[in-house]
Length: 370
Picture: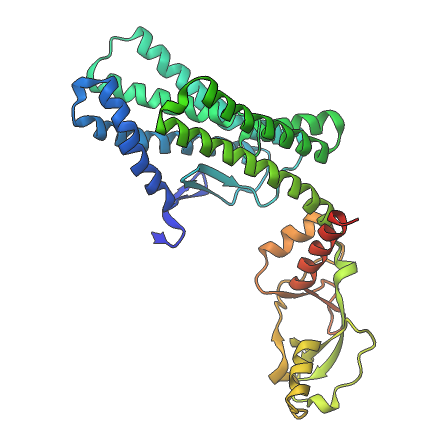
């Protein structure tokens, strides 16, 4: 099945796997760039060098898939939820909606990917060294070995979003007890690693190769961008940590669905909203201040509550004791944009997604501008 996000490859061990459209661009780059290298390295291939490069691109995707599956299966063994695996232009990523639960487990999940690739690469090199393999079988084995070696070593570089960066974050987190300290350490090493790659490009003479320039700059850019994002993540975690349903929920005042705007009672709290109820007393939707002001500005005081209301995900209440990341993770999984708080019994409070987003933005702004 295809979609705007790419091609669905089905599920492996219950984990959805998707091939991004950008992967096909990566394949074209490999076919033309790596094909030229193989042509000079293995002259006997002739035009078949580009076919071999295509084989390498496919094997690279398989190597990345093995890498990401190792992350996903290790995470599942720890009881983490795994949303899916996506193979992209930049390699691949595995999504964990629940986040990284602890320092030790985070390190093991991060290491699982590159270790699996390096083990396969070691097996491949051993077979090439000791077995009597030649021709195309030897070439395919060589490509499989190099693809796994590349994926494993590349991902061990100490910079977020690479696994090496997350390992650094987890180890410093484990030692210091502070995840923020771990993230800062990974970000700093990421800056160093990206600068080191550019220095190596010049000092080694690799800059004479256009392919090496493109590859090295791309890797350095990925690590540099990840390091900058890591610092933003610290501010985000601090902002999210202050959130609570109790602090963000809006009180409600019930009104009948046929009640005109002119007969609405006054709200006891400027943050309160009206809950539109049916004949059975059950909630149908809410009318917020924005809808009321729009109707009032239009001079339509006869507008009924039902005509002004917006929908509420009544069947998906948010527990009233949720805080921090648990709150964000919960509402990210819920349909709709407004939810009743779990204590809802005809009267109570509701939570707006926009209020959560605004609170996070304010928290980040307060820390960026003391």
